[in-house]
Image (cartoon, rainbow over the protein chains, first blue to last red):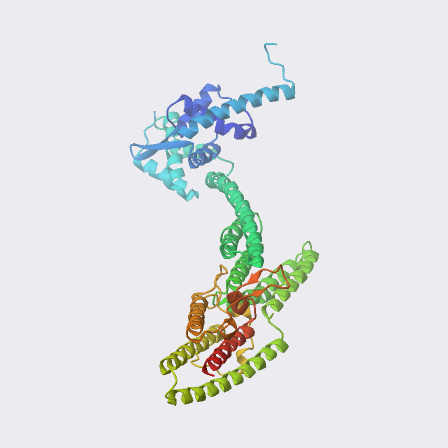
Length: 113
Length: 412
């Protein structure tokens, strides 16, 4: 089962920031593949959503970039800036809070109970 | 793993560009991404082009340029909030400084000029342009955008010409007429004819246009505001009378000088000194009058034609350039300060040599504000700041006559 793109859109920033805080530096394709693997193909980031978000995060000063030449083409690696590290923590905590609130709101019974 | 040839990489990059992706950063990101996918999923001998087409199709809903559009939207949304915040901050700031500036101006307190300039400059160069940019971003058609743009320009023009008027800077009248003309001949017609065509804005357009025409009309009336003609004429004739008396007194004094200087018993040195000092001060006053008239009328006369009533037409006190009488901080100009010093030195000469009390000298005391709170109005304010232009000229002529009267009392 795939999650709808609306659901992913609201959490994309959080996903990227968290991934980059766990891995020192990543490039775009690597991010999509890692997310795919970690979620067992459940979350597949589209390129049309990933790259605009990466550029926006970079413009906000949360990400720093370094480029490397792979043969003839250029690969852009993203990593967290100092602000980005703080923001990553904030976003993850916010989302955890959101999940527990949604659980309560929608009255979701977790499998263990 | 598939090995991409240089031609294939070039092919992908060109295709990305052809599909409307213009940001270089994004081009390179997409290129690397596509290359990774191809390398990971394609086997040697497979159909490269077909696979490439299929891959790119999954990237976004329709076309590749959507990615760029989405990026730009995300980048500008952040600017949008910063702009909106700055607009509100600058709006509050300029409104506050303008209110305080006008109040200070009415009360004749120092600092009004700084506040007014700050307020108007912020309003016209920060607030209004930001308002325009934010309004233009909203999804409207080009025609509405044009009206908003021209309206913003008109707002800026009106602000600037008000500033020039209040500060008595040169060129304020031209700016004022340009703004009003701009409003009547360009902005209001454009607004009216664009709005009246759409049924949903028709009623609103008519009402707003009437209000706009009314407001512009009132501004235009303000332009012509000046002292009544009766007062102008009264001042003119009063001044002409004073000039006649002044000239007569000058002649009479000259006759006295002649007699005294031929009289072997008189103190010639003192008499000569009196004549020299009196004439110097007299000429200084004439020069100030000339400077004021030339300043208002933007002329370059070398002498005053006292029979020319047109000097007084079109002249209001607000037309006197600030550097001539009182500067924008409410301080007398150097012209006035120097005059005061010379009058004082003339008075002290009369006092020491001819032993006159204050009645025999030129009055430099101010006057009590009997209609207001009773505080003392200084000589400078009384003669040069409060009255309209015509009376300032009359006051200066009066001082010339005063000199002749003081002289006469010394010579007798």
